[in-house]
Amino acid sequence: MIAILDGYVDEPSCLGVPPYISPYPRYIAGMLEDLRIPWFYVTADEYRKNPAILEKAKKIIVIAGIAVPGKYLGGRPLGLAELPGIAPDKEKILVGPITLELEKELDGYEVLRFPFEHELYEVLGGRSEDRSRNFVNRFAVLGAKVVRQHPDFPHVICEIETYKGCYWGRCSFCIERIHRISMRDPKAVIAEIKALYDQGVRHFRLGNQTDFFTYMADFDREFPRPNPEFMRNFHKAIWRECPKIKTLHLDNVNPKTIAEYPEESRGIIKTIVIYQTPGNVAAMGIESADERVIRENSLLATPEEVMFAIEEINRYGRYAGHNGLPYFLPGVNFVFGLKGETKRTFEENYSFLMELLDRGLMVRRVNLRQVKVFPFTPMARVGDRNVRRHKRYFRLFKEKIRRDFDRKMLERIVPRGRLLRDLRVETREGRVSFSRQLATYPLLVGVYGEFERNEIVEARVVDYGRRSITAVPRVSINEAKMYQLLAIPGIGKATASEILAKRPFKSLKELEEVVGAEKARILSMYLEIG
Image: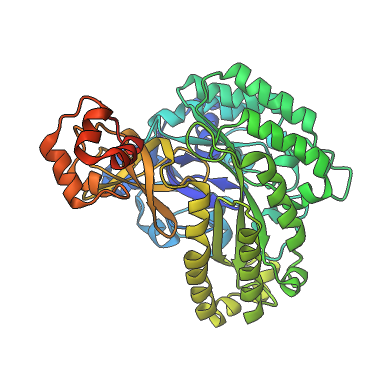
């Protein structure tokens, strides 16, 4: 019996921290199915709660690696420090991007280099002749049932790999340089989605690639030319096989592709708006708006090209869908601590974001992170010197962006009174239930109300934090609590007390007689009346 211990991954092109589940557990489960080896699946959080859960395993395959560190609500990834203490008496194999961090052998583990799939299959007793990414196709389908062992099932988002590698591959810090360009057969990708759909999955993200717009593109050019006709047919085929999908989103888009091929990219943007679901985000790496940093780190896109790409996605994607969020927006990623960085770098980055605001554009997410240096990248020669030197600049810059940019952008994306649907409760603190939609880079919504984990609620926006919003659940005015009434803009303690004293209300007219027409109108926007 082999245990698959999912310690979660977060790469530039792949998410696997709950509610996301990366492709790797499916690939591994599929290999074990193919070789007729019994297996079971456990998450890192399940293991921490009950280490004895691994006792029945003869061998453990550990998946881990946070290459792009962040803050996580759904789970706590395994780190290097935890690995020695995991089932010390068991045989263990370590896979995933965490192996890129290792500078020496790790006692108690057989470490497989990343990407690991071919080598792992051979270690398990199989033979791998196909060296492309199509090697995983059969295993992705065979291992689809692993998702049913995830503790959050069916509230999971399955990350779907379309291809590996980056057509640029020269950015000084990025780990994608280890992958050569290798496309997965679109029919195999659809077959994998269908296999997961048949297991009960309804939420998907077409991720695990560096630029979704260049999936099956023409790579016989310096910059691959997108194929909008293929993209349209690919999406139609997904819906034909899986007609009741609830979430279909993507991850990375290279702004350079949009800048180089605006006409083809517009065709793909339209397809995404039509065939994918609202709340979608294209993560785009600007990394830096400082020309010196761009030059010294071989970054691909200029600030002007990134701004153009943001405008093009806004042109078609900024309109709100049924779940309350814009159909399709860009996100921008900045990396700090790179070669050539000075105080001016922070000023240039700030100016870029302020210009974006001034132009009336929307971005769903601004990701600010300090570079994580891997030993095989050009950044290794610099190390974390600039990260340490500019620690204060980074802290002040982050504070300025949270204060001057993030809240204003949230107010633009989800105005007060906007109804947000399909909010899944993940945790609760006192009278606030923290919820998110199952989506790519979802908004954190603090809903005033005491709901249980995995309840699905609707709520209207009432206020904003720095990177989150607060909302009042769409409940009956006859059931609303005092603190929920007080959260509604324009409703004070006297009005709330009067409502509690005079209810139940059978109609809007009855409510108007008690609180007046204007306050009744406000209340009817947020709560069910009658």
